[in-house]
Length: 408
Image (cartoon, rainbow, N blue to C red):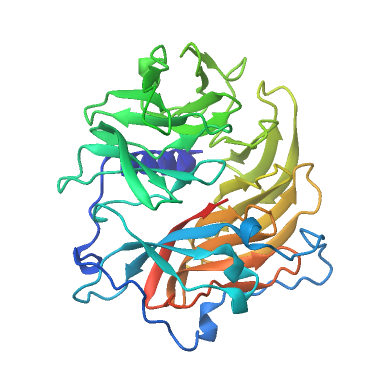
């Protein structure tokens, strides 16, 4: 539990105080539109392949995917060696590249009206995939921070709001609202909502207990925003978007870490950890905390994080970290159905940053930050459990790839 709290506070600090990108990795000059691609990807770039023998496929329907169904994969490119004229860039590839390399169009660099100088988070996509919300400072000093809206169709950016510091945003399930935490850098914080067109900015949750600050936003549960105290794990609140009032999420204090709501708002998933025995149990509960079930259980290890739901709420993927203090750490990705059936090991690596489902639930993309070739993305075919490094014309392993997001 102490370890989880430390991670939460570390994340909160990273969001609240912009961290400068190391000078060796950042240059303000633009990168060429198309990057030089490696002609042959080294075999060492691949993580340990999981033997699918005896394991039920995670998905059993046809893996064929249309261009529209595939969506687009966005991520950041960071040069691994300082070279004049290179800087961190936002890039995208078609999701079809994971399915059919012959039909894969070249990587594209996304124009952004500001340099990337501070801590980066993945883009947050609207449910219809038209817009992405992104909090970032275009100031040399890292403050103020602006809430940016990226229009993926026109490839344009617009600033919706400005505060000293803004945490990563979350879209409501119906796409009507963007929720975010704004901080003043002096210990003050407020929860805000805003529409994608920049209208309707309003503060909610003014009645949240001051003594439980700072808060961490865990996303949405139906039409309510989930706020969790970074000081004590059993203080979780729901903030109503209509009247702006908050209420305790559970009738009695219970120890919960990060709560991850299913997209259909039917369940909340979390890691129930026992600090003394190092037992980690993946559980799913109802919003009142009165009913739930165990989805997976592990003896030993460090944590289950991150935990993500498929778009259709039918299954979850999560990372099981273990042996962090032995000098030989490992990170394993498991998949499990929402009822706890078909628990499957689908990936084994070292350090995993993000995991995301494809919109159709047929693939999972993994951000492996310590692969043999650096930080790169790997795609898991959930029908075959085959894992391959993400490839596209113009995508080079001379760059680190990180903070992926999938535009549906």
